[in-house]
Length: 430
Image (cartoon, rainbow, N blue to C red; front, side, top):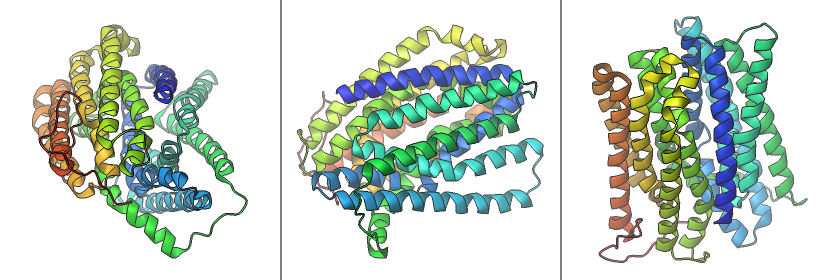
């Protein structure tokens, strides 16, 4: 997969930039401020899928099929309607959250954290939608360069400038720099995509067509919302149960493992489009072969990235400060959680594209419930290590359930070494 290789290289560079950015912020901010900043970003990431109405995954499912059928004006109409619906939902969510924030008795740090989250909601909604469009259209370089190279550079430059100017780097100023950088990069990518999809004769997307797209997207909303919430839920639980400073340590351990997350996403970024095409018979491979190839690529990329990162783990942690060495053991356990997730990450994407929304919602909901229970039990007893164990156990259970769902409902084996007992059709609603 040359596209996956290109995307992986870009995201490796992005992982390095993101690590440098987080290192800079951890050095320039106080422990509680940095922890609150990490929590704010986790909330923005967790709410991104719900406020985008599931349109990102709908784009991955719909756009390759429109393109394969030559419906170019319909592509433009979907894009124009989709980003506006996502932005409107994000803005309305921010307004509602602002009213709630004004009513509740938050302290200064809680208030600043809430403002950062609310300001980011309209932007992350458009971000998620544009990411889905990039995956659906195969525009791999554009999406990854914007999010994982340009944005970290802008955030780091703004924060460094604030520090050098003598203003100091606080939660509020770092949050403002992040939101402004998000606005600049999201706006630029929106303009580029709009120009690429412009036909000069756009099809009018009336209410009936908009409802059709939403009917395709909304069932995915619960699935993608729960799936997006899981990585953030552990960090948010640590912040709630152990405090912002511990959340900063946990978030740093996760960030140092981001190379593996980026590698995992790079393969999914490319393979989602290929799996979508295979499900309607427009791909070069069968659905099962497409799924197995994505699984093998994801495991290989994730395992290699984890091995490289863990070899340097002690040195990387101490770069952030001596207190970050406490997260060493948790980081190794979180690596197992990432590996467990990688086993069935393509399977989750495949089942979503195949319309298995109800089953995925139940699996993700059960996993989130298990994660919350284990976090509540283990975090107060074992600190960061307990939180990491809770995450690893939850991901292992989730992957087992996803693999079983693919075999039982569709007769497909996601793992190349295994064969299903009975081969069944791999049909999906378009």
